[in-house]
Length: 367
Image 1 (tube, rainbow, N blue to C red):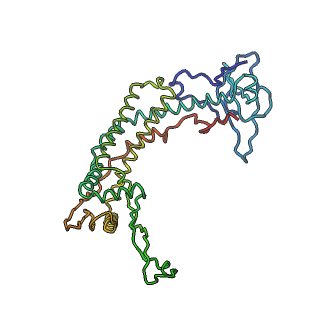
Image 2: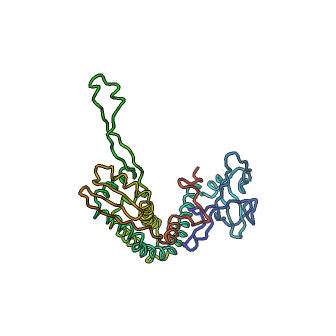
Image 3: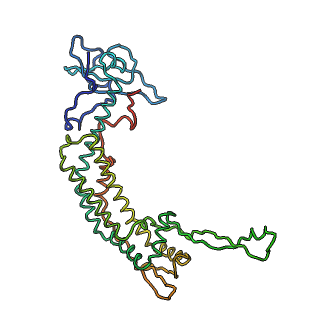
């Protein structure tokens, strides 16, 4: 007797694959189960695979093989005759009697199960894509984006040196605001044997504080709205690709991989942009503004003296002139629901399949 090399019932179309179940968790509980093959009957086909290997420390009796008659396996096939009658065939008998390789069978299963998940994922993405594009279009013009743009642009124009130092702290020190102070080294003075009246000084780095919302200073004033528009354009390209290939049968496995890699890159870009906007609230908190002013007044690379109140950063220059950076209170954020729904669809955080892959690396059937 012989079954196809695929080792699975043939699935011709994606439409059939969506609801196909390939694995059975309780083979002994199936209906119309026979204890031995039908004599002089048709060659049965593989209906399901099963693997009921118990976890370490858990006892479970072996399953009886309909061909050899011995209870000797946990991994095997559910074979089905044309009449609907079923038999259970263990791994070794499946290979020797039917020529079906469990390794090959498992690989075929994993490929189909993965595609099944991808198809469900694709349908979720299509449902979420339109609202997501609308969200991106609205986000580019939202007040929260303009607030970040205004703050950075105003600092660029009116307090360039302060902005550069905050950007350096964000990029190189994770927001740590430090100053170098010259201090007497009393321990060194006590140890010396000559010039005992002369003080010894050393430079000590002191952290004034850690800048809340420091990720905002990795952006520039015009970068954020431009990036959001670019992300919208990129997402729209992928949306048009999906529209052109509306029938899932047009998608190859490689095409699906490229699609979801592209959509994941879009999500990463949006998350980076939202991180900047979320940081604005922390940056303009009164206590944070006071710390910035304290640090700027001490930092030798930032000239003049600084002060702050909830609505302003005030710079008194060495010349006596005063420059003010107005602070706008944080606006209410745009509703993130369309983005989060799209993100869950792309990253399979909601999608369920009747056939979860065996493990992420190698099929459990391969051993």
